[in-house]
Image 1 (tube, rainbow, N blue to C red):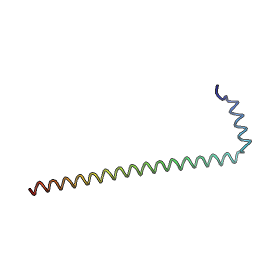
Image 2: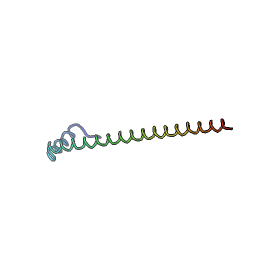
Image 3: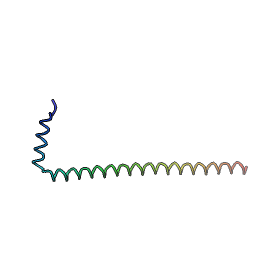
Image 4: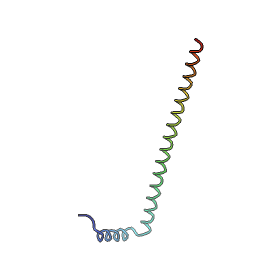
Length: 78
């Protein structure tokens, strides 16, 4: 058994009587702001992680290229 439509309507009326429309509106806007802030923080974190991994791979590429140049120079000097 689930909750039927009439039961949900009764519950909604009770919640409105207890809290009032202004308090519910404030609660909704606060909850929306918190969710928006959470999403922004998650996106910023993902961007930061992506940038760090790109920088790390670029550093490895530069280091590998430098080693190749050093190895080539050693072979030419012999």
